[in-house]
Image (cartoon, rainbow, N blue to C red):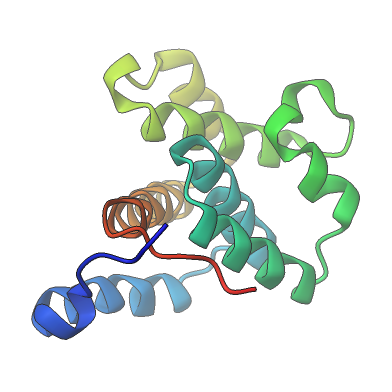
Length: 145
């Protein structure tokens, strides 16, 4: 596998706009565990090896357990995730697979567990990682060894 274009070098304004979204997310009230679960699960669905590698490392550094990381792709069958985390993971999957739409059931479950601001921050975190996944996959960024 080889890298393709480097968007950060070729279109620095576009890359800076993406970094602006990351800066915003860094100043939200989103819990670090919630951010990392979103990033890892969306990256798994999108097949982004670069982001999976990056965010599993970051999650472990932030205190996430190996057990939960390994079970993330099968979270519905694993007893390791809270009700809030399950709602976030369901929403992450449906936003990531947007052609299947976000169901009322999934949205209303999340809305019942989080206030509107936190829910908006969750959605923006899902949108951001999906954009990063698409950049990484389309340019074939390779994960660090």
